[in-house]
Image 1 (cartoon, rainbow, N blue to C red):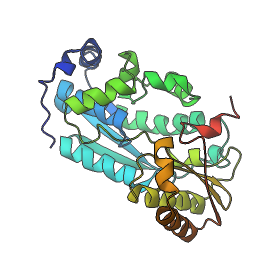
Image 2 (cartoon, rainbow, N blue to C red):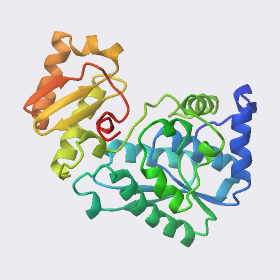
Image 3 (cartoon, one colour):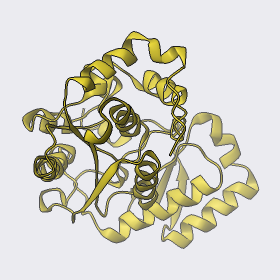
Image 4 (tube, one colour):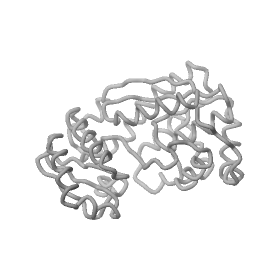
Amino acid sequence: MPQIAETSPFLAEPGYQRLVEILSCMDSIAVACSGGLDSSLLLAVAHLTLGERVLALTVVTPYMASWEIAEAIEFTAQLGVRHQRLTLPIPADIAHNPPDRCYRCKRTLFTELKAIAAAEGCAWLADGTNQDDLSDYRPGMRALRELDVRSPLLEAGLGKADIRRYARALDLPVWNKPASACLLTRLPHETEVQPKLLRRVEAAERALLDLGFSTVRVRCHGDLARIEVHRTEQARLLEETVAAQIVAALTQCGFRYVTLDLPGYRMGSFNVVVE
């Protein structure tokens, strides 16, 4: 279990105190835990605030990276929080990756999670949506509102910088973890979601992460891979030895062409045409 010390001056900030107050009023809570920074901080603070009245819930689908699931399992075990996993197939209404897939997916997944939370006696189901999520195309937030899912980080007015600061103050191992998103975001809209494409993308991103790149997206355009990394890491990616390793790895994953996206990593780059 992480040695969580609530002695940092950051934890006296109004934002953190608002989060604690919100959670204190919730009696009991089930937290949708993806293994990412946001839901992990929410789970940790809920555990500190509500103790055993907290349940972690993780959905396992073919479009979630295997290492994210593994990290969610490891983190909840370290905290000592009750944890249940729900395995679901690709919902039929997102099988062709529609532009509103996030709404349809969250509607399906959180309906299932609400049923589990209710069966376990939890007063609320919550997720890690935060203030910064309002700046991107997020149709899934409508599903959360419709299902009365709480977003305590958003309610407390916390953005990513706040969340990262508080996670570091609590000495959580995920404090510096890059942002992540499901593998469907690597495919163009109106593309058939094939498990083999998802595994190809997952393997390609794992190869790049293993080479030391901090944030990676491999956007899949058929047999062409469009790699997004931060601009500050592009020069290293183009070094002859590193580039050769990447081409070899992604070719082995099943890509025929390997390209670098010059604008660099940005959240939801396939959403540009939607907006």
